Length: 381
Image (cartoon, rainbow, N blue to C red; front, side, top):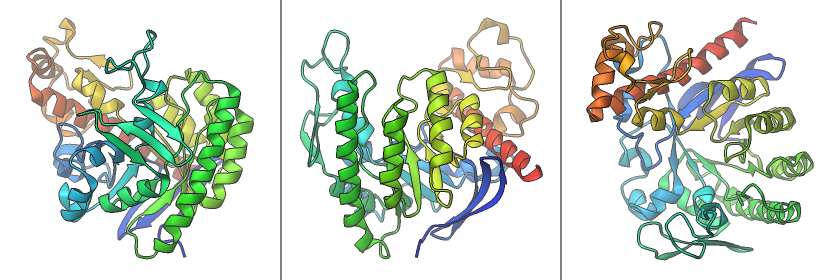
């Protein structure tokens, strides 16, 4: 019996509103997940995401965030986090946490990390990772030490982290490789998925979390279809789709999302990885996706950029120096409720840390409000 309860409450064509219950936490979908890569959303006290004083009283609290297996495995280490009682106690958060497999980060040390001159992004002449049938070998980005992720080991690491939703290790193929290479790597991922499923299911009842396979395979629709057919049998509670935010054109991403979304198992959660623009979130929801994550809102915030209905606002621009209007008059998050564009301009220009915090809260509010608004539109249809 599935430990993750998911039911569809309302549909509008392929779009849907659902309800999740897992480990005593209930939430409705669609949902945007802020990214807390290293056990924190940069510059934010995690309690702020559930506090109406900061996020406003018009929206439900944010009950699901993401953390990164690769980075937490390297520092401070999954065994240390296990000793601490898991991520929930380590970062003092009693709501749901999703962890990715760390595969994208490990593979990015290989061909992903090469520059045009053939050196890696850290200046080394050789790639820092290598795919084998058994898993992926890689070197630490911190000290160059050697490490290895096997499919089974990646599940065990995420169990040490104590995450609620875990991702299977897959081969995240870089764009531009041959169709033959794509297909070979897809077959490796399918074999890895079977190994992870068979490793995890005997532990299913005692484990805290659930495990999602990931459909990849770039812009090849026939490959995507084959991957859906194979991986759906391992989607006990949900299924993720990757490879749509790693350099492809918006038109290509939209085409893949339109193709894949309606073909996923209808009774499972659908997670589209790494998507954080308003246009793509709307398109993904229209095609049956339930969950999204992206570093974009906090990354933009650290560069002094706010997300708005009128487009992104770069607050360092001189025209905001004397602009005493709120950032978003429709928002009741603390940033728009208490501060003006002029004040935010001042903080950004002075490189004050508070600028990043306030703009991160606003940008997260913006995407949270977006999916909540779409949810209400579906319910009202």
